[in-house]
Length: 212
Length: 104
Image (cartoon, chains in turn red, yellow):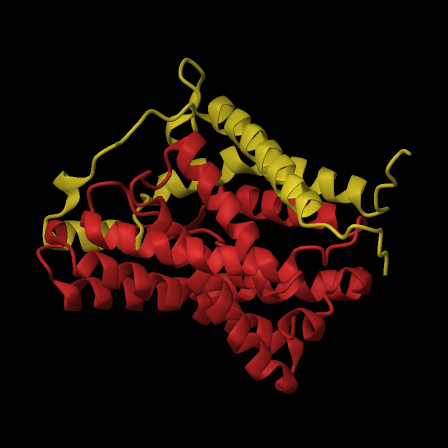
């Protein structure tokens, strides 16, 4: 889902880059001064885990592969604001150091994966958690990544490189990630359930962060 | 005063090392089925692939290391990227940390 340079028209890239900066700025302001010394390394570990997990391309017979993106996972474990900052860190390093995703469109990629996937995934989690944490985490991962992909498809479909074929980009990326997102949902739910049972102390005080 | 690190940190770092070791294996396996993401499929369907450009030069392009073999380069990239992300993420965590240590 990392968009390279040249795929999105410059005004769109700038618009979504500005939106990403605003959202991340608000997120940083919301959590500033709220992280304990004991919890601070968790942000680095979760970010590093997401980076490493994104390098694991799961082969899917039929000519495709999927990898964990981790936006919803970060949101559930860290809370949405820290989750957004965490995924933004990953996407930025991927672009700057590894050329995965363009530099001009970095803001758009951050918006799709660190803003849309994180906050939409977290919204589904909060909505569905009364029906069970595992189900809620699964839906968060699945629908969060699909929402991020649809946002990317919107940006691409409104750009000249894609000949403004919005329906084509929405259908290919929407359907593709709706299917591949099942892997994201399964990993999100499984890893979160394991962590919640093994180390319940790592779970966030979600209520306090959301109300912050 | 020396910082106290959480007891889960050593196990977390070991997990990160295992994930880095797995990266070349998964990369090879994905290559066997042919790597194509929906974004690439959409670009092909609309004729956009030729518009992709590279602005700037990455130190480790495509998660490889110039001069190193595929698997070795992927592993080195995984270790470097994981370490960089860990340090930057932890640094952001410290920057946004509480003025006083509010351990829960």
